Length: 234
Image 1 (cartoon, rainbow, N blue to C red):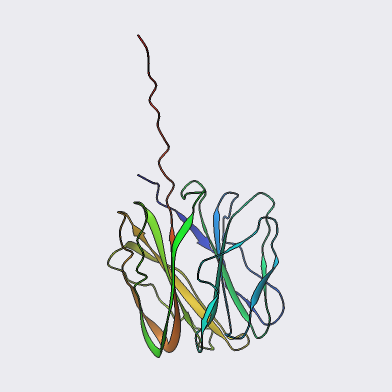
Image 2: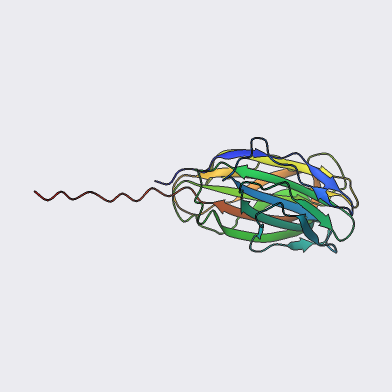
């Protein structure tokens, strides 16, 4: 059975206006860890990585995407290499909000760490979040992430831990808002999918009404080592 990916930490909230904003590292980040970086800005803006610091970042499938009132979401990943430093995100206008999270080396599949991305939106301004990604985990012991955005111009966290009856051990990964520029934010939760199957439906209730971007990804567990029996000729 694959090893379950182990969440290391989320970095502190990193936000700014039109200049380059360094995105804080998660505590304990180590060489070989899987890093995931999320960036939020206004619909009309773009985000660029101005400081790669070594190994490149890969943009995740389905991003960036946007919705009026919910902002624009970018997601990237990389496996941390020796000598890597902190990246910076630069918005073309208005603001950026960024966060990096990490999973411990040796607990995820290094050859295929991420997959089953799903993106959608809810073009209704209310406090109800409900997202069924419609994806299936490829193996046992995967970690599934659900994320939502908020367009609220506030520093008050808006997106508490999510529920999902198809997953166990639900945990809030981050829940950040900003008043930089036009403001906005995002929050994400993860849950364990112990047996391969559908990723279920993420639900939560926002603190304040907003339209929403909805996103989900699967972190693949470290596969079993291939065991080849030794044949002894008598």
